[in-house]
Image (cartoon, rainbow over all chains, first blue to last red; front, side, top):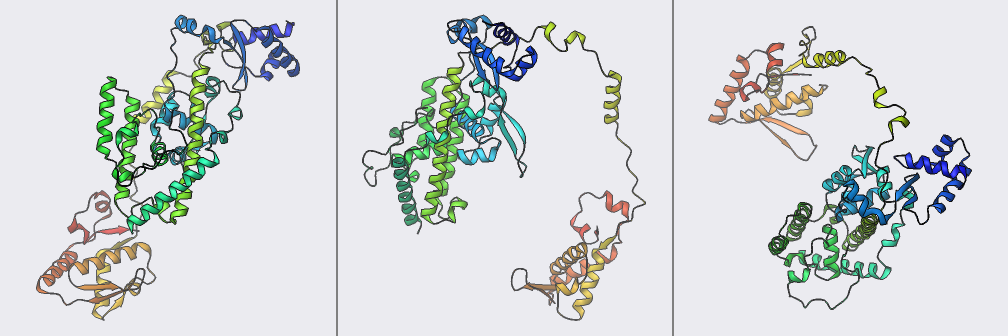
Length: 190
Length: 304
């Protein structure tokens, strides 16, 4: 490894949070392009090692290899965080894609009040308040911890949600059934 | 998440056959919310909520809980929310015309489109939620440095930190908050008042000349006077001294004298006596009165 790559490795080893390229360049008195090159070199050099280089939350960080997870959790007495409940996952996805977004908006999309899911996600540090809407409702956005825990660099790295839309055939079938249900109800009520 | 496949299939259930709950596969982990359930029900042509015995759903769930032998508070809460939503939905279905107000104003086709739009949007985020939940699982394999930065490398080591404020200053600030400040003397302020007795007098004067409209009685008056006059009018009506009518909302209110019966006359006399015998309360008096009684009302003055 070049000298710069070794220095980058040392800094990332010490840093408690992901470090941006600009911060690394500043600390090492080097050009950002050189730092980027050094990061590439470091990533390559870490192939097959117990530590991996990851780009997330707008910066770079060293992480333990997934193979080491079991042992690491025993060593640090740190159990896995519980999985997201379906309600939390839905709420989180709405906040992640539409942020900043208010709770009433989340409730409108989910069709159910989302107080407990929002509170749980706030407690988990995945979302946080970010001001108020023009109607005074609290707005929510995702936190840097969200990016770290989900291995994302920015929220723009989230996959295009259009991919989860039902197919046109399913949509047509759904529309037809809704219309039929509406007609039946209209007949009943008249 | 193993939500039911979004693909219609199978023949519709025979007409008249109530959907059986065991076919609902009441796996509650599957349903993330009422829309989810609604979506699934529609896709299985089991939409007719009217025929679903929600009590059975509750019983099935209790059995399900018992089988699991542990109370998952999160899931139980979700279930409560879900069943409450279903109950509301069902009660709306049972009451014609008590439908979603926003959907109610639309034609059935538009309502279906609106609902479809919402369901599609919901499906999108449900899918994204599933992806996030999986990602959350798979990303847990990586662990990051959790130890704080070594002291020597910190910009401001804890040992080097010095108290920037005197603790006595904090005590002083807190002490100031704990003392009740002296009441502010407002005796030099004059408060214009409108008394009920005055307005009763005005109305009675107008009544003596025959019928009049409310607008005449309050011509050029400020809001408080209008309010007190209305209150006075109510008093007169109560006492049987006056009757009033309004042909249409926001129309003119016509007031005319009412022929009081013996009881009404007595009541009217009592009101008059009451109003006359009471003097306008002093400022301090009015300010200190918290909850006026009904008798008080006849002599209450209202600051403008």
